[in-house]
Length: 132
Image (cartoon, rainbow, N blue to C red; front, side, top):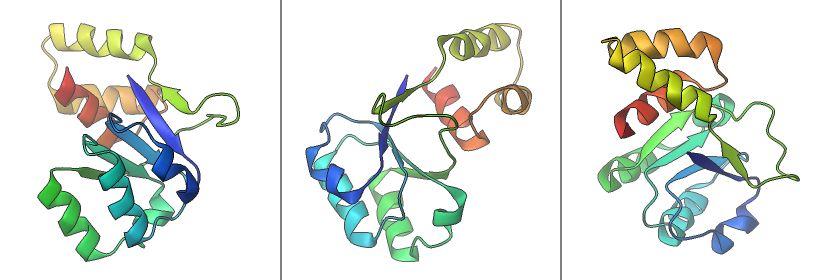
């Protein structure tokens, strides 16, 4: 699984329309969010850092909810955009999720366990679990 990292609003018009998971590494305005949803109609998740999450307007939250798009807090730790525009979720993490699921653990238990071990936050882990 890959997360598309967008570090500036100037990148939005050039995004692949098939992007599903996007991390915004800048403080998005309402216009940026609308532009992102227009450019990437298949987007399912928009992740933004916690400090920026508090500045998102209620109207944008409602708009995203109506579109079926999850807005989550989080970061892509250790990612260097100058090397790769995508942050890849480790295949080992995906294998670990499958293993824990096969052992009969609940999603909540899996997230509690992997949140401590991995670089992904709760909301992103729950999203990944919903896709498995």
